[in-house]
Length: 88
Image (cartoon, rainbow, N blue to C red; front, side):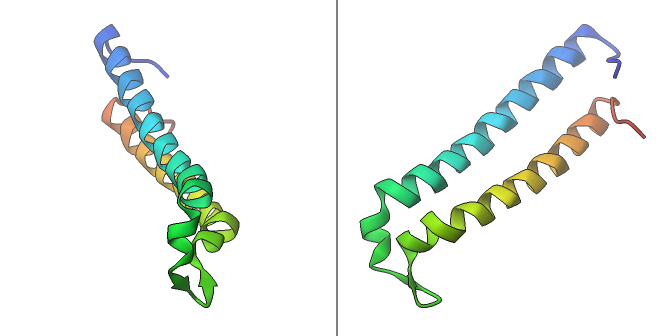
């Protein structure tokens, strides 16, 4: 991985950190917010026969984490190509 300029390197890492913070915020909201803090209001809603708060705590957060991994990989590949540091 070699950047053309020092400015490209700094911009790349700023975008990378920004992306990670956004994805970690989503992870936090889904796991802690929906699974713990908002469980009672969400339990008033049924999703496939289960209370939505219970579903987020048991299933939804796991699905969200897997989706976040694929989103991160996709966006990082796009970022690598933008700054010409991709591996292929």
